[in-house]
Image (tube, rainbow, N blue to C red):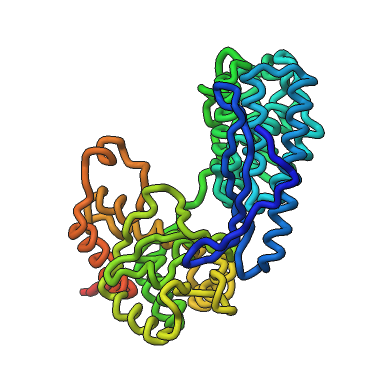
Length: 450
């Protein structure tokens, strides 16, 4: 396959809710009969609001030029290293993965060029864990990781490579893998404990995944990390908010903040889902997840899992408040955010909202529980006990970690879910502080002296 660097391509506008410049050009490849055929390629160049047409054309031209340079380097490497068909395909897929891993194709092409200029194919017996992870595993998988997942996985990868990176894959055994995991649980310098269960479990899962990929590539005979055990770790705190404190906090918040906090507390939605809500997401008695927000950026069509895009029941108590909020924002278009940031266009950052709006009031009310989205979500699940069956709670939280039988064969009953959500909301919002009864004093002892 090759790109004709002299072509300029063409640009066009695509999208309804968010218009973007889209570039079109052609590549040429040989078919099974050896005939050269032309194939169309399209790339997203950027938002129309941030790029003029002339700038989009220039960006497309630069990308086509970089793509031609990439093809040239690929051909030279294939000829120089005498790569067979499987190795060629693997290298081409890796390069394409690097390009696709970046939101900006021009940045991706620059990264691919840099990669090819330093690429070395070691012999199988000298492939280290670091080389395989950085040059094979991460470029291949990074494309499919959400931005938040990418950060978490990058942290785990660096922890793994700092300890095991120089070890050749052929010499990496179960003992080395288990000792690495055990060491993470040991007390750190200046601390009484090691890393948390979550950090250690992420590292364990990531190491298993890396070595599973090496196994598929026939670089090792078996996965030495497959049966690693979790060491003893400090237990994470799983706080919940007492009902009377939850009601006290919600009623103390200003209207807009109260509405957001009640959506978190009773719709049990994740922060990215709440701040990614648009008016088109509100369907009278439920929300339909149409995208999420991450660090002030809207990600249309993205969700944590496929199951997360299920409808989210809105309790009856919240519907009038949503109607009032819509009336206050009557001029906002249908695709506008329900809870935008100060500029009215970008999503709020959850950590900022918690720090500036929610936690100061919780502190003022002397609420000791660290109030955050996870605590509110966990509190709902706790309060739902006795109000609905486990399947209803799972359906509302849109979890996927209940036993396979329940996931595959049992079906959520929408009216049952709605009743459970309304019962929990009513239970919390009518909760009174527990009455402290005085301890009765014993009657004085008297003694009659005759």
